[in-house]
Image (cartoon, rainbow, N blue to C red; front, side, top):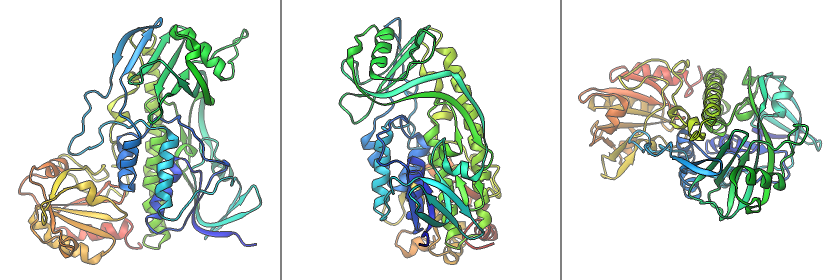
Length: 525
C-alpha cells in the first residue's frame, strides 16, 4: 500500500506542533499532525505563554480563550523556617503599552492551552492522530516517507519534529544534541490537590536543606503545581516522586500537615538539561521546540521558545510548499532561530545561577529568575539575511513589529496595527501622504499576498481603498512613535507574516519594496 500523502507531517502535538499546524492550515497547506501518546496528556508543567507568545496566539485567533482560561502572574510569598517573611510581585510595575499590549505572561495549565490550540486547529478540519509513533524516516529530493510503529507509512513533502527533548525525528536524522545534564540540580514535580493555602499567591518555602513551591493552577478549584527538591533515602539516593513523598516534603519544609496534599498526578523528576541541536534542518526535515533545544526552567522560556520557532517556520514552509517562494527561504529558519536558542540557553542558565544564589538568603525566591528579557516581547532578527536594510531612531529591519492603537480613517472605528497584521500576509505600512504611490503599486503587484495601509496617508492606500477602509489615522501619534517616524516624514515599513520588520525605506524607494518581496517569499527567486 502506498504511503498516505500530505504536504507537511508534524510529529508531536504539544504547543509547538499545534502552533505550526494552525499556521500552516490557515494558509491552506495540507497538514498531518501525529503523536505517539494514546491520549491527550493532562500535563501542566509549563506555566503559560509570555508576552511574545501571546502576540502569536492573537494572530492565530486563540488569545481570547487563553486569557479567559488563565490568570495573571501571582505575587510570590516566600517563607523561611515555615514563616512568611517576604512577598514579591516581579510584574507589579509591568503594564501594557501602546506598542506592547501583553506586558505580562499568562498563567495557564499546558493541557488547557493545548486544548485551545486543538480546538482552533479543528476549525480547519485538522485533528491530531494519536497513538502514532514514528520509527523510521527516509527522504529523497522531493519527499519524505515516515514509517510508524504499526507499519503504516505517511508520505510528505516535508516533516517537522516537534516531539520533545527525546525527539525521534532528531535521532532518525542523526542530528547531535550537545550539552550537559546537571545531576545536582534536580526537582520533583507534579500536580496535586491541596486545601488550605491562599490561592491568590505562589507559595515558596526555602530552607538550607531544600525547598517546596506551590502555585495554584488556574481554572481549578483546588489544583496546584507542586515543585520541590527531591527527598533522599538513607544512602542519599533520590526517592521516586509519589504522593507520600510529596506529603513528607511538604510537612518538612512548611510545618503544615502533609495531609493537606492529595491526589498527586503527573509525577516526574526534573533534571537541568542544557542541550541544543547543531542543525535545525536536514533536507526536507526540520526540528522545532524541545526537539531542537532544552534548558533550565528558570525564566519560563522553554514552551515559549518552541511556539516562536513554529511561528517563524510556518509562513516560510507554506510559501515554499505552495510554490510562492524559492526553497532557499527555508534556510532562514535555522539562520534566525538557532542563535535565539543559543541565547535562551545562556539566559536561562544565568537566571538559574542567580536564583540558586538568591534562595540561600532569607527573602530570596523565584522572582530572581524574572527579567525584562524573560518576560518581554523579545527582540528580533537583525542579523538575518531577511533583514535587508533600513532603520529609524526606534526600529531596524529584523526587529519585532510594534503594535499601536489607531483609528480606521474611513469609519472612525478603533483599529490596532496588530489587527492589520493578523493573517497570513505581508503588510506594507506607509507613513505619510508621500507613500501613496508606493502603496498603490505594491498592492496592485501583489494582490492577495500583501495588504497596504496608509498611516495618515489620506485615502490612497491601494487595496484598503477598494475595501472601503482607506487607511489608518494615527491621531495620538502612537504608531509614529513606535516606529520612530517623525511628523512630516514619509516612510515605508514592510512587515513579514510573522510580524517582524523586513524593510524600512524612503517613500520614493518603490524598487526596494519590490525587490524585497521577490527575494523574501512572494515570488520565486
